[in-house]
Length: 91
Image (cartoon, rainbow, N blue to C red; front, side):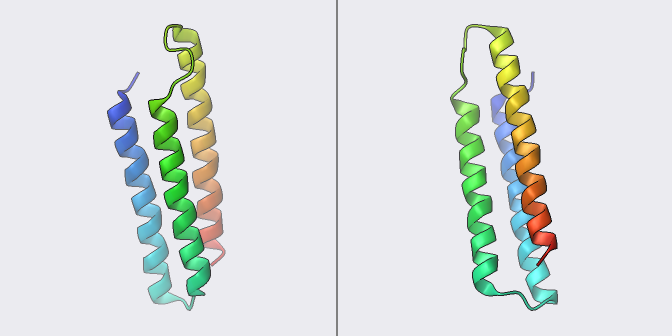
């Protein structure tokens, strides 16, 4: 299993890339600033939520529970990033 520290770094990096993409897109298209700010705030909240979830694992003593927890975390992270990227694409 990858270390929690590296996992947090990856989540922060991907969030940063999404936010950068939003601002770069705003240079090329006229985008409502309120909508852009809303999406950036949503990305930052998503980042904080998932980093916090990495730090507080359910069932620390049982490897099966930990593995299932991180599998669920990965699935929900992937879905959240895809949803946010889709919203950015609609701008």
